[in-house]
Image 1 (tube, rainbow, N blue to C red):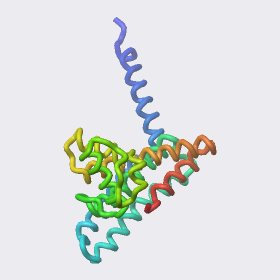
Image 2 (image 1 turned 30 degrees about the vertical axis):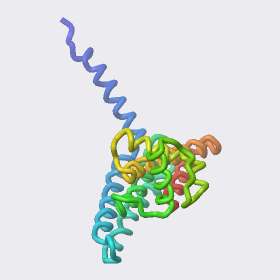
Image 3 (image 1 turned 180 degrees about the horizontal axis):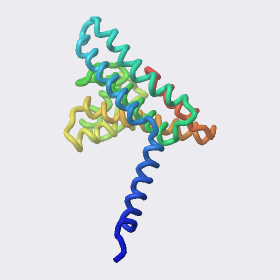
Image 4 (image 1 turned 180 degrees about the vertical axis):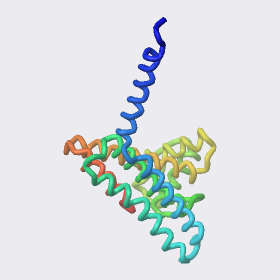
Length: 206
C-alpha cells in the first residue's frame, strides 16, 4: 500500500503557507495593537481619576497618548510596511484617538458642535422629517446626513441619542480616514505617504 503521509501533507503545507502570507501582510500590526490598547487603557484610567479636576492623572494621560502615537507613527514612516498593515494601522490609530474623546465623556456629548447637532437629531426624531430650522446653527439643518443616520440608529436599536451619536461619529471618522488613504495612495502611488496623511488627519483635534 502507498503511504498516506505525503498525500495528507499537501493541504497542511498550503494552509501553513497561507498563514505565513497573512502574517507577512499584517507585519507588526498585532503587537502594535497591543501597545495601543495599553495606551488607551492609560488614557481611560487617567480620565477616570481626573474627571472634574486637574489631578495627577494628567501625566498618566499624556503617557497613554505617547504609547498610542509613537509606535503607529514610527511604523507608518517605515518603508517595509505593507499596504494592508498601513490600512490596519490608520484604522487602529483613528479609533484609539477617538476613544480618548469618548472616555473623557462616555455618557454624553460635551462639545458645542455636537450639542448643536443633538438638537437636529431631536427634531428629526420628533417630527419624522429633516431640514427643520435649528436656531442654534441654522445652516446645520441643511446638512442632515450624520444627524439623520444617528436618528435612524436610535430608532433601530433603542440607544440614547448620545450613544448612537458616538457610534455614528466614530464610524464616519474611520470612513473618512480610509477615503484619505485611498485618495492620497491613488494620487501619489505611495501607500507610505497615504498612511502618513491619514495619520495626520487622525491626530487633528477638530
